Length: 381
Ligand SMILES: C[S@@+](CC[C@H](N)C(=O)[O-])C[C@H]1O[C@@H](n2cnc3c(N)ncnc32)[C@H](O)[C@@H]1O
Ligand SMILES: O=c1cc(-c2ccc(O)cc2)oc2c(O)c(O)ccc12
Image (cartoon, rainbow, N blue to C red; front, side, top):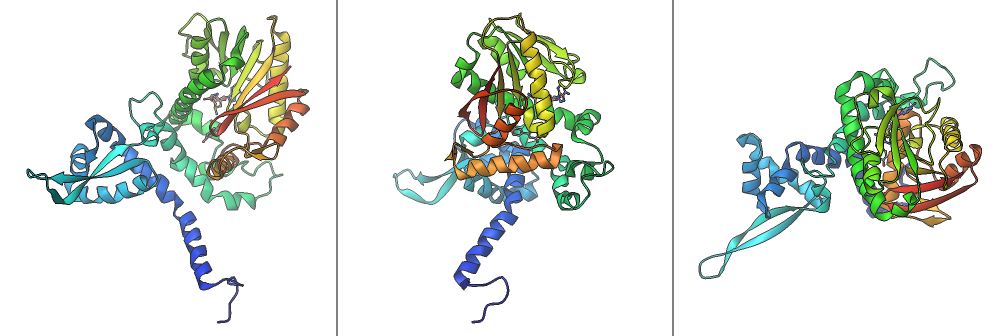
C-alpha cells in the first residue's frame, strides 16, 4: 500500500508502536495526577496505619470517599501499583478444611517510594509533590511556546513562562502568596532532610577539618542543622534573604542565622555550601555568586582547606561515561525544563559547571556522584 506523508518506510506494526509511544508520552501527566490524588486521599497513611497488607475493602473503609464513589478506588490504585508505588498481593482464602476458596483477595502494601509520602514520616515528600503539581507550576508549561516566540531582548517581555502565566516572577509570587511560598519552603525542607542524611552518611569526609561553614541560600536551615549536629566543631551559619530567616534561631551552640543578599556580601567562612542555588541562576549570575563565595573564603581568618561545596545536578555524563540510568537522566532533563520554565536558569553538565568555575577564577574541583539525581562538587580555593 502507498504510504502518505509521515508514514515513510514504516510498517503498520511500526506505526502502531509509534502511536503507543506517543500516547504514553501524552498521558504521562495522568501518572503524576493519579499519584497526587492517592496521596491527597491519604492512601499511604491508611495502608501504613493498618500495620499489615490491607484489602481493598479495608482501604476504602479508611478513606474519606463518598460511598457512591468507593468502587473507583480499585481503578485509581491500578496506576500507582503499576508504577511500583504500592505492591499488590493476592491472598488466597482457605476454608476450614484447608481447601482454597474460589476468590483471591487483593492486598495492598507500601513500597519504599510510597513510604516517602507518610504524613509523619521523617522524609515526607508530599509538599514536593503538591508544589510541583500546583497550577502555579504547571500553568507556565502551557505558555512555553508563546514565551519562546517573544523577543528576549525586550525588557518588557516576561523573562520566564512562569511570569507569562502568573504575571510575576517566581520569587515575587513566593513572597506575596504565602500559600505557595510556604509550600515551596516545605518542599525544599523535605528534600533537604533526605539529602542531609545522605551527605552526612555518604560524604562525611567532605566536612572533616572545617572550622566554619556558611550555607548560602540555606532556607530554613534543615541542611545546616544536620551538619551542625554531625560536626560539633564546625560553626554553621544559614545565610538567606532577610524575610526567610527573620524569625529563625539556632538550636545548637554552633548554628546561627543571618539575613542578607548573596550578590552583595557573603559572611566569611572556611567553606561555603551552595545547595540548589546555582541551578536557580544563569551563568553570568552564577559567576557573580561564585566570586562572592571566593571573597568570603579569602576574608576568613580560619586556617584549613577552603572550598565551596555545591550540591546540585550534574546532567548525564561525566568524562563521557553515562553516570546513571536513562530514566534518571530523563528526570534531570525534566528538572532542567522546570528551571527554564520557572526561574531563567538551568541544570548543568560537567563541562557547563567547569566553564563557570573557571570564569569565577577557580581551577580545581572534584565531583562525587552518590546523591541519586544530585552530585556533590567541591571547588577548591
Ligand atoms: C532553591 S532554594 C534552596 C534552599 C536550600 N539551599 C535547600 O536546598 O533547600 C534557593 C534559596 O535561595 C535563597 N535566595 C534567593 N536569592 C537570594 C539572595 N539574593 N541572597 C540570599 N539568598 C537568596 C532563597 O530564599 C531560597 O531559600
Ligand atoms: O520547582 C523547583 C524544583 C527544584 C528542584 C527540584 C529537584 C532538585 O533536585 C533540585 C531542585 O528547585 C526549584 C528551585 O530551585 C526554584 O528556584 C524554583 C523552583 C524549583
